Amino acid sequence: MARAQVAGSGHHAGKVGDLLRAIDGYQGQFATCCALKLAPLVFVRPDELRRAEWAELDLDGAEWRIPAHKMKMREVHTVPLANR
Image 1 (cartoon, helix red, strand yellow):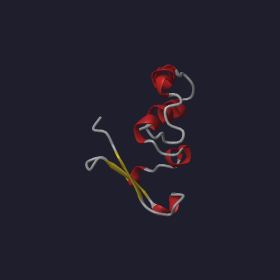
Image 2 (cartoon, rainbow, N blue to C red; image 1 turned 120 degrees about the vertical axis):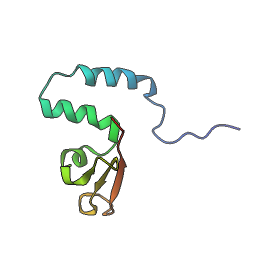
Image 3 (cartoon, one colour; image 1 turned 60 degrees about the horizontal axis):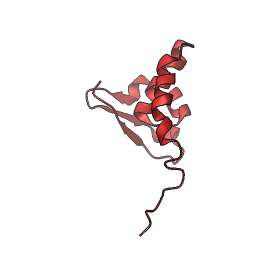
Image 4 (cartoon, rainbow, N blue to C red; image 1 turned 180 degrees about the vertical axis):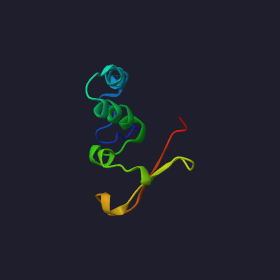
């Protein structure tokens, strides 16, 4: 039986390491550098990351709750945060 493939998956899987190294080596504006380093950790849309507010972060609970009014589907979105 053939394995089903999700649309868009696997096309650039071997390039992830290259991308992360390029992000790590980026030396542009500080805010851009920080956003590039956060993006692969939270997997949100660039606009959601750009408009993040400290009040949305629960660092003790390790989650980021993006309010419904900021989300495309108008539902609260909870993003788990890493411990570090």
